[in-house]
Length: 164
Image: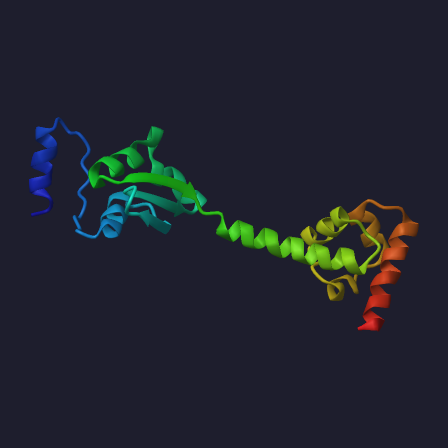
């Protein structure tokens, strides 16, 4: 009734905090249960080494690891598995790949450096169609180039538009 048995145990332990974890014979479920309330993004088990590689979102990392690594250590002791927790970088990597691909396309089509192409992409110009609406002053402001270079880029954008 209303956690009275747990309250009695906590009282016996001098009000030490207690986590109650649902046991499972499946190691994956057991590890996931032990890491709650952290939300696990990905988990990879190596049964030979009895280890688990766990990925969590960056905002869940401190919750999963705990203060001074206490949650990870307790999960490891409880489950008998070596637990390694890292932040999930798959979304960041995918975005970086898309930025690089868009920048490469712009650098190949326009008289700009790879670095300038990355600056354009990060400014929201991910393709030639988007650059169509930009004027010479936009290129001067964004790329920090002189007006002659900006005009050359602007003309190249419009030549590419005609070619397509």
